[in-house]
Every structure is written in C-alpha cells, then in structure tokens.
Length: 77
Image (tube, rainbow, N blue to C red; front, side, top):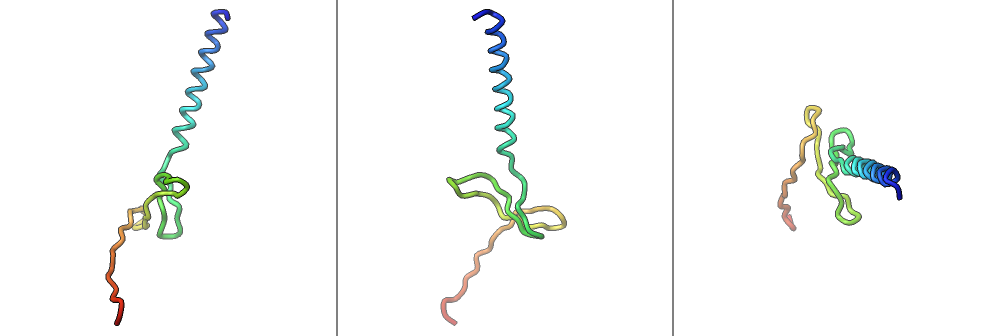
C-alpha cells in the first residue's frame, strides 16, 4: 500500500466517522410533543419496546408538565 492510498483510506475513514456521528446526534433529539389541542405527550426515550415520556398540557401557548393528583374514592356509598 502506497503512502497516498493509506492517506486516502484514513481520510475516508475520518469522513465516515463524522457522518455517522452527526447522524447519531440528530436521531436522539427529544422535545417534540405528540399532541391534540391542549394535551400532549413529550417522548424522552425507550424502555424496551415501550415509549417513555411526560404528559404535558398547553397553557397560554406553552407546553408545561402535567402532574397527577391521587384522589381517594370510597368503595361504598
């Protein structure tokens, strides 16, 4: 292998690393909200095949995290 062919191989290898790294960075972006009119879901990641994330609500045009409140309901009336 000549010096020039080694240099070209190293250059192509480096370019391939940069391209794969850039593609991997854009693939894992989060922040987009899957939504209806005023309620949505902001995906964070994966737990096996299940999508994990946060439920959000739209207040004054801004998405904010929804918090659930546990209510006690009597078993009999």
